[in-house]
Length: 372
Image (cartoon, rainbow, N blue to C red):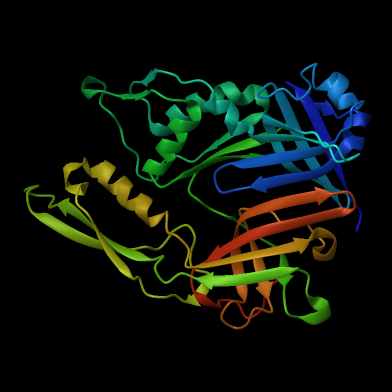
């Protein structure tokens, strides 16, 4: 399977890396996580290397100002793995010829949102408008906001006060997302130089990727895959609200730890093992209490996690996070569909490998076969 890597680098709008840079590139690592992503570029350098004698002193790899875009093209289809900013340099000289390395580390473009603390009032503005105002300045980086309004809206009365941002844009938006059970992350692509800033429920794209197969002899397409079930992951939380008439009688409401936006992909779930009580809910406004309850229902940890690794040449595709993937060959209990939580891409000359984590609730597949 034909695949190659494209590296764009530079301040502002990055351009294709010069030949001395690409020739010195030893390895590329990109990690796509649940809330932020990062990358690491490792170069082989010598005493007379252009990277050390000219590019590094001239600021070619300077932190924050240097933007990096990494694109992997597999079977003629380009996939943007990373669009971010350099944060760290590490030089490792060696007495052994050819062993000196320069390592460049960075984060995705959400880093640009975490550099300046601000004090900005938001009088009479709904939450989605506050988030849009925070993300608007980053259109210069090609960041396109995708904002889902809260399921249960809240409104501040200006005469009683309003929200005020007293932190960085990323910290403010992430705190707002956590408060209502949403997530916030910046995903690169779909074209180089463009990214999507997502603020909304933690939803995986319902698009199945090619299935991963293990223990199927010649049909296996992964190097390793293992699963574990955490019997302590699930809990029941008891919320207390006041009766709607007198507003004095507390009413307990027990809720199971089930993610309403990530339905169980297995037929048989294990029972919750813990019971917790939320004692502050009765003191909050009804809409704020409802948002907290909904946030609990949208942030359910998974019972089953899977950890694996594969070679892209053998697998035939680039596995991507925040999507679905099927599993074959793990047995009746663990076969079936899974959510892909994170993927780490490890690229070297002639080698493209990935390590990944999967999750779901429940044993035994809900579908008779795994496709594709």
